Amino acid sequence: MFSKAAKTDKAPELSTTVGDAARKAPKAASLISQDLTVEGAIVGEGELHLDGVIRGDVRVGRLTLGDTGHVEGAIQAETVDVRGRVIGSITAKQVRLYGTAYVDGDITHEQLSVETGAFFQGRSLKFQRPAPVALAAPEPEAQSA
Image 1 (cartoon, rainbow, N blue to C red):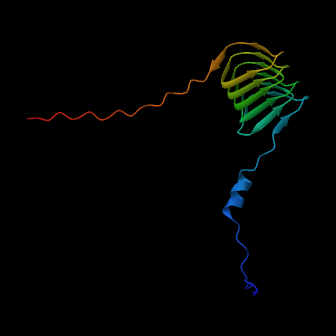
Image 2: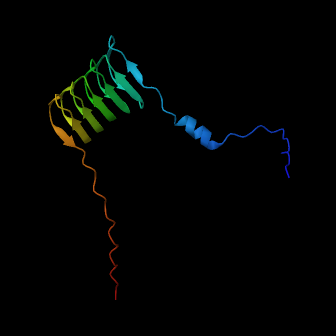
Image 3: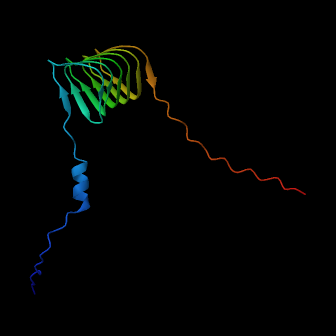
């Protein structure tokens, strides 16, 4: 009726899904606190939470600009949430300007949301996705007589 499982000397093998999940685990956001000023470019693929000042360009995966955060330079990211001050352009798929935001510069985006109270001076430029290219049917070759 019941049988014991045979003992083996082999260690259990780890599934590849466990390894994949560990590699895709969310990383903690980097933080530049209110009392810090950075002069120069910031480049990375992760998330940055900024409460301090950056005088230079910022290119990250996601930027969250706190109420005391300030950027003087161009911003490029997948997502940008602005509660502080930006003097320069923003290029991102998704941009949110909260009520305390101050942005003086152009915003290039796919999605833009602006809360009541936010200041925005510049142009709002929508990303232009390239139209799908239709494959042309091959033209019949002329036959020689």
